[in-house]
Length: 555
Image (cartoon, rainbow, N blue to C red; front, side):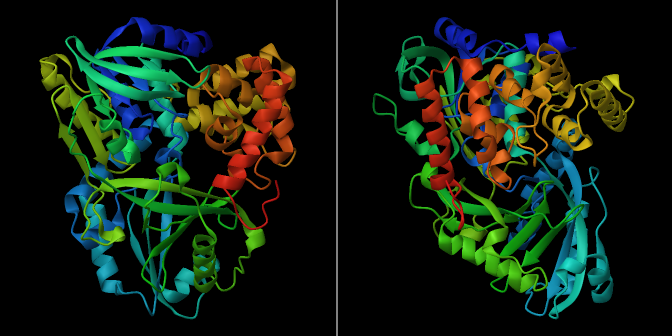
């Protein structure tokens, strides 16, 4: 299995060479979850497909989300039953395909004296939520009396609670889900390149030519395709405007900012969904080494890449936590990091940010297709619709190119060899703990990150036994994961590794304790000289200061 999995992934240099010489049916612009899903879908249908991402895969909205596969309980208030139905069904499909990092979690919902939704309304809403998921429900809801709620979940203790409820949704790893789609597409002979920005595109007699700049070495080259799909999320309007002629695109995006904090862990096996006094939802979700708290929903007038959690955002979330959890006493010292993303919503200027639809839109221009809006949860169905349209535009028979994304496993998710996923976990814990003397938590992290591709980690540990060393004594991550990220997951920078491949940037200390060792390992793999190593350290510190700032951050 090791040779099969690793051999499926060509080097970045090989991918770039193929991009220069191949002629494609489809080129996808944008390496977030929507573009990555389209990339995998088109590959599985037998099309020649490529993907170009100007930064790292999932470096935009797709690594800044709430990290949930969810039907969207609050969208029932807007009567978006179709969206909730679609998302609830997709939640189950995607979670079943990624059991190593998608976990069904109970969500506890305290109801307060100020909660606008009365208990009977919540009961009906949760009934509808379960009903709309049929036949792919993931758990049953239940209403709770005040005393039972506080007894079972004492952290929520608050004098103003009147009742409570719980239901189920799914926690996931958004950056890893995006990466799995990329790796699956590449393993199936698609070509994807990060740090490859489309600086211009133009229509020609043969189709479309994209002019691409590789930020890895500054080189500019061309990629030729019959059809282009613009899946660049918050940047969708900008991509449409890069045509050298007078192309008139119609896509229009409303950008809203959502911020999150990672904080000292207080929860273990359940999440909490709260209604603040202004009726804005706040959730707390456990993630092992930290809890995630979010989110806000405000219009964002600036560039998507400039969105950050500012002091006002941080104070709002922290104040809400302490009002809703008066016994928890959260302080600024409990904050480990912040992150912020921009949602590419359908433009509906007359609606409040929170009531703007999470439906998606697709604009068809024949040889160009633009897609925007939607949710992390519905990416697979969005991709299917986009590729269905592309096949029609290319003059191909849909019956010869059927969607297979719900039937075939992702790369690194081939669990059929085991009796069950639980049997796989049990075997891996036993093998990796005994063979490589790794802690149980480290093996859990490896399973969560790589699924069946954990075998490649085993091969790396055989190559160099020193790579079993912890990067930081206080965290469960090992050196082999850095090598894995560079060799097989196309990481090019320290930010790629610590922010998106391993999530160490979210933990206490933000990875600064292991920064020197991470740079040393990456430098050996990528051939960095001393000046490049020092620059990478500075770049990472700058990223923390500018993108993940919180009171008390010391870089």
